[in-house]
Image (tube, rainbow, N blue to C red; front, top):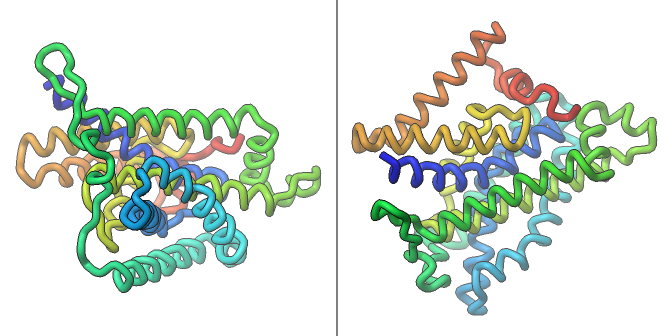
Length: 301
């Protein structure tokens, strides 16, 4: 039982890592980025190319692609999302959905259907473990991924609450028009926020490649896990996303103990229960943006 819980918490760290970018972008931009998973896979492929062709360590490779993905996020905001949000709440969702389809098919055309992995490029770290009392073994890589999630979540949270840039981003999220009247460059703040969110996606993509295998269409499951973790934990704070990710992972782990196919079913069941409870408490119809807005109310305050 203890071993299951420990492994679930570590899995939750990975889910928190892939969910933080999705939750952050919604918090500060009110955009549900359905290209989130596809961008993570793009990052994994970029690091794989550096490792395979240049022999670079994936840990060095991720440092090199972070600015690239940051620029990609900034361009995504300036060229697509900034225009899409003017058309209402649904248009950005459709825009990022279309972008995800384009990215998936471009990756499939370029890399084919073969799976890739970054684990061969990190040596013994892919299987080494810490030994805990009670003959419990904990993989070093999952521990490092959990630490990375905590660092990124904590860094984003501190940036939003303690820095001038964070205050500008929160002001833009609350009311971009009023923020502009008091001297905040709303376009700049939104662009930086999108860049930061996409950089966190890059880290999660590398974590995906280090933990196992990926292919051109691996982004959809990652998006689903990120979305479920965000809904369960609530988008009110980034730390809530961490709690939601751990709850999701625990449900999946115990579901797998009950039935071979219970891993995914357990997580989906908890997600649906939380979703039903939120809808019941709010007394609203099933509206995606309303649910997220209710879970994230006050995030920009």
